[in-house]
Length: 205
Image 1 (cartoon, rainbow, N blue to C red):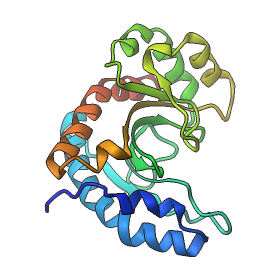
Image 2: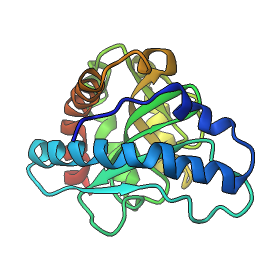
Image 3: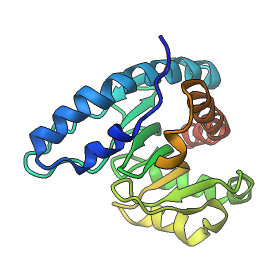
Image 4: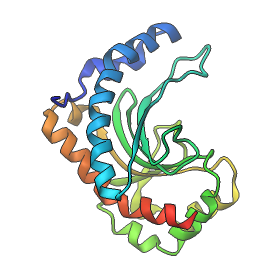
């Protein structure tokens, strides 16, 4: 099936008022694209990591009042869920797409991963300058990978709610100009650079 890039209307979804109204737009505009994109990326990652990977599309089922400010697909080695496992994410806020290798607060043993990465921080700093880091998956904020410090990783070790997400942002302006092939190839290239760190994380658990 042909890959569809994200369009202005997809990003504008997060300006729709009301939980039900925004969720309907997410389900109609974005999730069909997630299914196609996610299937392509799941197959790609299964080969790249040498193990079967599974696609999960965020349902936002726990929300009862506030509409989501972003939405995403996740890919990991577990068929039942992704939050308690190292995983890859592709999703969007109203102004950018994010591509992450994610270790979020539900992940048991994330302190072991942070310690592993502390010993290999130079390898993380060697990722391209376009790569960024987030410490909270619910926020847009991110900073350059070269600014990742031992203090950041120590916080992941010691603070239960601390998170670590490594990857790349694609601005809305850039994303809407990409054709489907360019878009999916950009994501695959980003994921390929993150796969070695995903494997190291799994081995450290």
